[in-house]
Length: 472
Image (tube, rainbow, N blue to C red; front, side, top):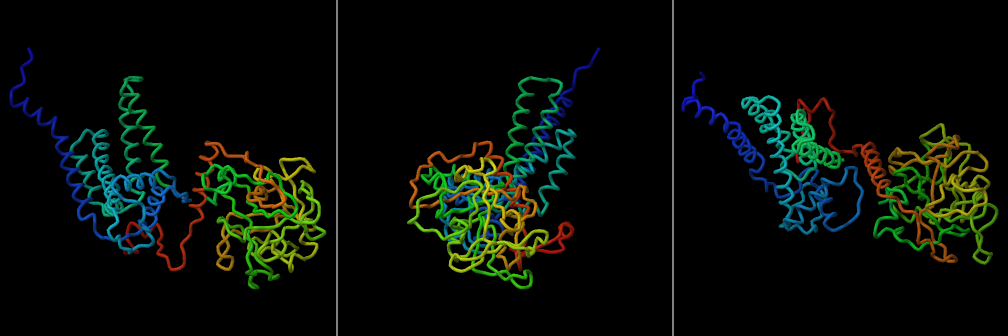
């Protein structure tokens, strides 16, 4: 016959039941002390607050911008700033700038509180895996007093937001696995659902001219949004030409010449530039005569031999059998001539790859290839930046491999006073296409980041031994 539990045993069992919860709240209180203590100091921008505080301001002001990180973290920062009375007017220009009474502390507290919950998740995850209060407390103490996580939690940064969602995902998937003996039960579905939500938030947590024409056509305030532009291009049209790949930039030139150290022919530089600029505008002309608005209007057709005159410098897009200054396996592309007059190396055959020979060239929709008439190479945009002499813009060359995917372009901007604006149905990207493109462009932008001259840098092996220290 089993003996009944004594009052002492019942008391011990009861205290054992509440001990994990008691330790959890002690750990969380200690976490709050380390993350929130003097959080309003310093009263100036620190480190990457200059970026993410600014992004929050842009969301509050509904200003479109490009950044290499997905939007959820920045939107969250902006939303909390709005809720806590910040109106988005502080510039967040550079580290060290005083806040001067702007209500930005709500965004700092938001990041700090999420940093506190990260430590809480350490305790909960360890408990689920070990059922040991001692192990949970030790793991949590490591996180509490880790200088790196304390620092990341005390400023307006994306890191505490990302870490929070990663920790939440880990905890939820462990809880879900613990329900494997009760498949399709309410708790099984609940933890599966929360795992999916937290994973989605983690993926979207960190990480207009940079986007394709069809993407820009969906953005309110953009020149292509519900645009009434001439649908088809004619001779004499002023156009901007964008590389067709995701994240492709605009064809661009400026008065600076290729330096003698990298190019035999010191002619005018041609690059690809992601920002909209008057130096992106070219006029389409016939190959054998200057344009006159007194002549009958004539549309540009696939297969035509044309010249592209850079409007600001009056020089024609040009190539020749000289090697490109950086990509030596390609040929150099320049702007050449005087007041629109050049030579036979200014001639390009325009092909619409998605149209028949003789079909009219449409803005946005026609996917174009510009093949040099003499050299038999195609206008090509690279993904890597030029050195300082090229203003760190993208290299443009003439590629002997005519069918390369980076040889494709489309007409984006279009002006012609002789044509009516009737292209109200410009192709707009679908939500799926925009989602895929935006993430590809962010990944591409992140891979192209490189330190500027004089900027603090370190190597991964420096980090665990704090070989270099940056002061903010």
